[in-house]
Image (tube, rainbow, N blue to C red; front, side, top):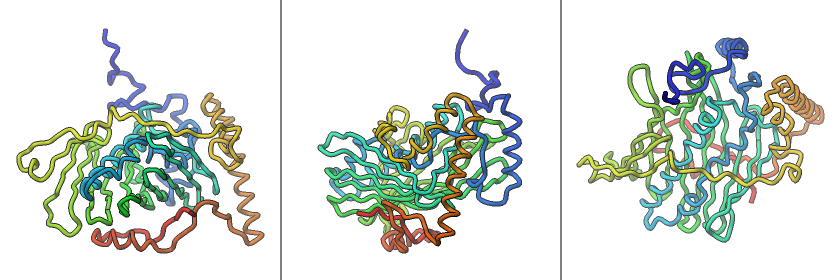
Length: 389
């Protein structure tokens, strides 16, 4: 008899995603009802502990560099177009880690912890160069929640800095998460900057108790060397489409509509590439196999060596309780941290103070981003959380 998972197993849905356990189903349904009647940003709602991850959202910035050798190789392209293609490949390689690996690990998507204001996350990756790639991340806002991050390899001259916020809303059977912010990748050897925008995130499978992430709409990678990558995302509909669909084109920003390259496939599977000539002949080559591109986990200092505001120390007791299945203790630990934060905010209000940001400062106008994205003619944010150097 085959041991292969089938749809007759009621612990998983038709897509193979793990369902919410029966003993927590009533709490899950109550949470869904509260979502359906809530009119504000869903990130402010308190979620039941059993759907929470023990990882803070601030750690998600590490997904950008979990292929460290690819990250440091970005300046190796000999021409601006080759580098645009390399940057696009690197970006595509981050998507599965960012949006699908938790589903694979836990069987369904888990809600990350909202970082406390001032929460910090540090780490590094070893590379084949004489310098490590180093990450610094800080929670620079709590209402709305915004994380800023800086990833740098000095030897390669590759720097990524950016910020991410989220606005969530309920629509029909889905939760839509608009990602606020953008990233700025600098290749110092070529004095090039690549501005990166983010796709719309949709949380599917809610009513079946097996939530998973799908990406939708578009994102862009716009370089100061005159190229733009436009990526279109889509998922599986009721009757048509495939999960995790990725379609991209690379153009010169001032060129005719015909693309220099097309990339198609799945951001969790195989992506194929065709240049303009091969595209006419229907010839595609394998370009990036996301299934075999294993990430390299970030190296983080031991918890006992971390400061009071470093992420894994902040959430240590909560994580221990959650990972042991003690949801009551996990809720108590989470409530304790949240109440401490409310007291700090009340004290700041009384003293007419604001929380000082340690590693990042708000830049009212990101002129380079505004100039680069002007041809897109879409509403964008104007400022930027810049790393203090």
